Amino acid sequence: YVVQDGQKLSHFVHRHEPPVMVEPIMILEEGRDVVTVCKPSSVPVHPCGQYRKNTVVGILQAEHGIAPLFPIHRLDRLVSGLLILARNASTADRFRQEIEAGKVQKEYVAKVTGQFPAEEVEVNANVNYDAREGKSTTEKGKSACTRFIRLGTDGFYSVVKCVPLSGRTHQIRVHLQHLGHPIANDALYLH
Image 1 (cartoon, rainbow, N blue to C red):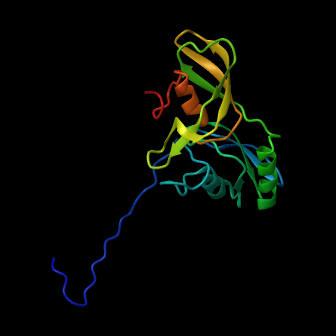
Image 2 (cartoon, rainbow, N blue to C red; image 1 turned 135 degrees about the horizontal axis):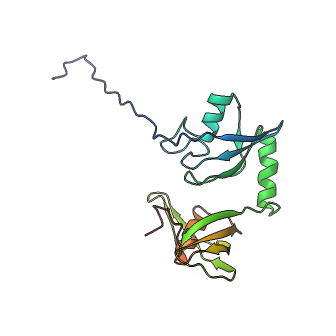
Image 3 (tube, helix red, strand yellow; image 1 turned 30 degrees about the horizontal axis):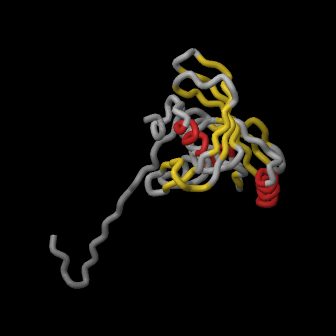
């Protein structure tokens, strides 16, 4: 087709968001200032990247009419767990200040490859997040510290409690890889 003077040629691209698991977001508590939910894996917390509506914030608004919501902390898209969302900016700021002041301790549980050491392990290794790659490494970067405690093992896999003492992108995942015990189903850091 040849475009003539004065004619316009338009091209529209219709994109669909990547799907998320159909597991529902379970509301554990809905208070005046906060909403606490159990976030399933595969669902991002807030709009980012390719996701706009298929997020915890978007789903709670669309399916439960809960809005506005302000994430106090994040969980990676592939991580499930307890998530606290503020219902107003001042509550979110108050919680963030408590987290930054070290008054709140986060704990995670991970299934890792191999037989994790029986004694407590503390990793002090820098974490450098490369946004282009979507991945972190322990080369250069910002200082980061994570404490690991083995909860059990069958010799092939171990269940480990992970306590991040700092908050870097993919910190736990990259520190476990650094130790030679990556998370068992982690497509990004397993190899």
